[in-house]
Image (cartoon, rainbow, N blue to C red; front, side, top):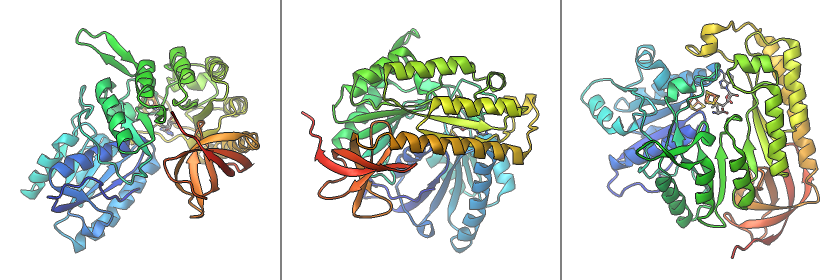
Length: 460
Ligand code: SAM
Ligand code: SF4
Ligand code: F3S
């Protein structure tokens, strides 16, 4: 959740926008597009909800608890509206797309409902509300990528920025609501991505993360429908911009990450050796029910291939426990796959049935919640053990770290990340945000590497 101040509010801005963002990085990037569209309409962003003329909540539907949280937040916003009756309240993002006008029926405080592909329509929707109507636009698009809108960087540290390279998802994993809330997959023209990366560098940014639900299926097409730039080629184009502009990307679907992508990562020092590689389950029957299109063996082989081509690659994953009909033995396959995979990090969840998805229509959500939770705790425990061991193995090594700012715990320490996306903490001395430094790792916890800076890395 974030309240934010715009860094490029026009001098003519007369009204205040307060925007809170939930869910994934795509939603964070979308809020930056919305702030830009609102800036054009004369709004600057504020961190104080009490001074807002418009409040937007950019929402997530991925699990039931993500939606429950937003409902709670909307009830709180209702109290703010009592003291500020002119305030316009909008629900944006995936809940807006999933629930559409039901949102207006369920919660009186909402004036506007806007789906992820309709943000250009927001100024017009605000006008409708000012004329006394409720306003809704949840149309999905096959083309919209907001390509030429320059996002207003919200809560930015001035070092890392997201660049959205594609929207939507065509994969239809049976548990997942995203294809319904974000629509069909489409890629943004590479020229506009390169321009955005270049502009960010000129403004002092040192790391860009290329974003999409499934970045490896990025493809720019010509008018005849031929692929003129695939994901590996896009990575290369961004990598060639500047040696000291780091590149990350997220998320990859295991089925789509090609050897060409792996070799491109290996070839360029500024493409980080880090891949988010979501397993979901270690059992082939469950993977089939999930419609993930790979099985246990295939996943294992591709994991081996990543490590063969990029030996020091940081790898993270996603796990869902207690998917429909999952037996104890099948859960154990996830446990053993995590032990084999030795992921650096993992995002782990209990299965949450989402209305309208393939799984909700076809399979019974039959694993009791206490069993889902116990299985979740088991995988979390393995992950903690793996994270600690992998971090401890880095003690004594020297890591190149991009400094992102002060450590959360002390203003005498700095925080950054190494190539593999591990957090590194070290004494501040005279180093500053945005610098690359060599850090000798002296200690490690499950969540971070701790060390001391040796010298700045200077790029020729
Ligand atoms: N497209 C990305 C991918 O395939 O990895 C990200 C999808 S989603 C935003 C992030 C993660 O949420 C998924 O990888 C999955 O582990 C989890 N997830 C999605 N739907 C879920 C559900 N119904 N219940 C629990 N976890 C879910
Ligand atoms: Fe959801 Fe699967 Fe698409 Fe990821 S790849 S967004 S999990 S449908
Ligand atoms: Fe959530 Fe939508 Fe992202 S459902 S995870 S905000 S794409």
